[in-house]
Length: 321
Image (cartoon, rainbow, N blue to C red):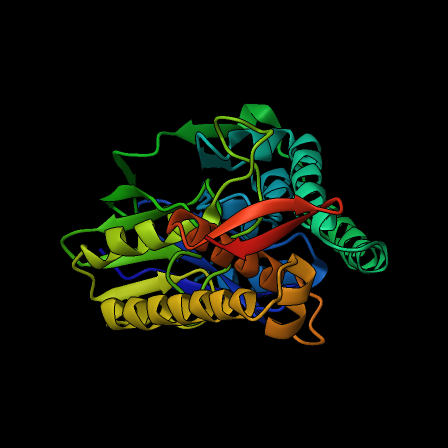
């Protein structure tokens, strides 16, 4: 059994690049596959050629989670190679019914972000989000259903000549899986463990699409799950592989609680609206990751019974309990 081969692919977004991982034996398998762009396609072809392979040789693509930078190019690879695509059961609809799923996510974002921002800020947010959504859809192929297979959120998958434990790791998204090889102490970590703190996206709950998932709270629980694993090397979805995952987790959890407490102090000092808090915490940075993190800090404070929500003048306001 050989170590996963990291293939670094360019991305349209702020992470610089995204990782796919190649296994050669007993058949060529890709874990994640980047976005559907010409630059990503050429980078993939070059990386495969270094191992005497072409895209047509790929037999299987296994997806950790259905975000565009991890699944977007799967359709083009399938068209070239006829490869099977394996996704977890929570990703299946995203793979075969992408546009409808994005519509649900956008409705949730409008409700929980635009609903917190005055009209002018909401207009600016829409100017930011709509081009982003269009770019996502242009870089993501809906997959032919006959090529898509699903696996459960627990158990094992066999690739690279060995069994990998499937680990459900919600937080960044509620449909994320990691893969753990116990003997080698390897983790294919997706966007669960990164050298920077992952951001939970704003999305609907799996059991009730009308309700929002509390992503940051779930991410903290998944961090505990990761800390319990014996891991020598993490193969992350972005940036270089690394070790000493527990130290990284501890640092990221400390920062989350520090920012949560800073949010509490702002509320204590009279900042009661989402946009007021955001303007202080993320000055001049109108961005979705920041909005998602603030949403998460507020969730944690509510769960800790330190603050409560009230509707005032049509907007949610946050006050100390």
